[in-house]
Image 1 (cartoon, rainbow, N blue to C red):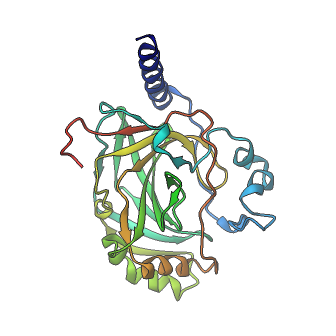
Image 2 (cartoon, rainbow, N blue to C red):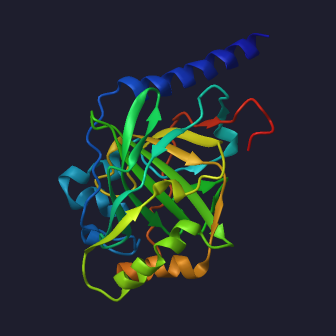
Length: 277
């Protein structure tokens, strides 16, 4: 009986800790670098991931931080929380700009709506892709991961991640395929691609992981609220190749290695109704 009480106390303390971090921690402005040509994903390079923290003083967290991302979403570490709440997103069609940052292709949004976490609104700022996936699930790395980056008025950052495996085409990438082809044939860093609806980036599940981490590119700023959708969606090999080719970096990968969890809390929101996916 005593061990059960101790477990319950530990569980609720973990949930309380992550909610306090989300609601009250003074967050630094988590801004990814606009030009990714200053670093590399090649582990054998002097600019590779293990050296990021030494390339610029303001990038020190990449090497010394204790809340770095990505992580392995290992089921043994997960604490299931049915009361964490359904992820509320309120997106709308908006003007979009395709940006080549050197190691990834990004879509910059303007007035595309927001998500809401613990009563705070986080506005959708940009979307970009990594291949293979940066996060892993029980040690398994998937073929691609999309990040939807959000910012609150008080400069907190929240990122939604969705992982993909090879299969049927991703409908959103199919919509922007023409623009990606144009980017492949162009040296322009930015191009307007008209009005897009971010709601077309499908989640496919209400279940999600939640933890406190960092940006996965320099400056690796910490205290980023991460939400990783539990369902792994599908994408074609051709779509992944097109995204990588459009960047012009002649690399087949742009994923940071897995980082240590370091005793952080990893939550899984699973609705009480077993019929809800």
